Image (cartoon, rainbow, N blue to C red):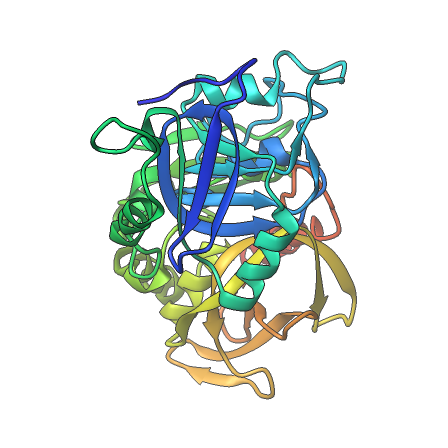
Length: 387
């Protein structure tokens, strides 16, 4: 249960699963929440971050110290609701100042029941997560801070026990919780050139829009869609979206993707879709220490040598060799993109079937737009197959 904090200075406590504790003030709704503590390095685009389904069951720590100055509008959300389970900021804006704003960030968090905390040292928290890794966390404020006896503040040991009893991200099967329950169509902008079946594992609204801008009619299908469902729309190409959770649990999407690979239909995957392609090709996946999140991550396209500044949101990665092509059941595969910060696989390119994927977000509604060419690459695959 949550209540508003607007105008109040309600105490709040953030407790990490290793016992590290930060004290601040409630921001957004009052109550308690749990999730995986992760940090995002973006200085802008917080509205897109909050509404990205890939952040389901995660508590997002903003590394930018001042958050909320542009307020909230009704045009920029990537989905119909906020998906983060909690929000952590250092210095929230007292008054939004932007001509597009219709309400404050605090008001939006409160209205959607998102428990947050402000006024803590987010730099120290980020350094801790970088050193120790992403971990479970709880935020407590208002009645959630009252002891069981009703006399005084709950002790930290009690709060820590609650955090340690919450579910972990590793092994979590979450895409079905965020995907559309019913199929829908995003029409092409202008003349229709292609039809794409997009399997929704947590798709962002801007993704089908980017395809529609290129003359693609996008049929967005539930995560439970079968191979028959995919081909019922007579697609020229198939797309697998971003999404939350551990790719090791996504056996059904992997099976569907293998069916697409067998038919040699042009295929494109992003983020979770990249991990699904990795598994479909026979590679493993693993959990990163603290992941990549933000809109300033450098990636090299190894097929061209160009470096892109890209938008990321992933805590898992594909375990594929960087130094050679791999032989798989579907032919040869190469790592097409790599993160220049840590060498993590950021893309796969099939050499014998028309399929590729990237680990990051080329739709990048909040920017940057360096990777928008990947949608054109998908169009080229479909053009080649049609020819």
